[in-house]
Length: 84
Image (tube, rainbow, N blue to C red; front, side, top):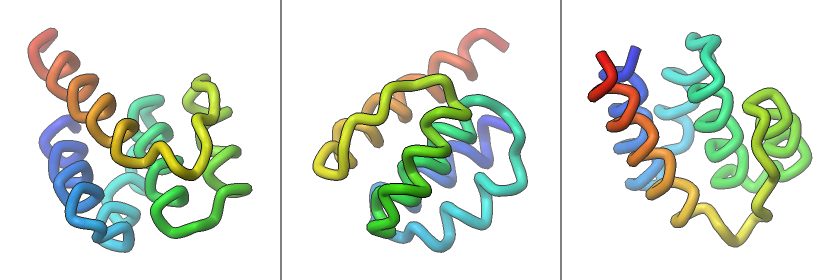
């Protein structure tokens, strides 16, 4: 799981939200839901992003926070990997 989510984060960092979307939509984890929300922030679909943030049980940070969200998600994926 985390390998694919790490790839999704790399795509998000590069602004490649479509490629990240292909990865996260196949994953049903809470972490993937958060990344899915970030995908839709990058895409500019904030209403959809809010729904994914609700599924991830996270407060929606707003559309201008995408870079800090990517950084925080990267740390969360690494933390998940270290627990394995």
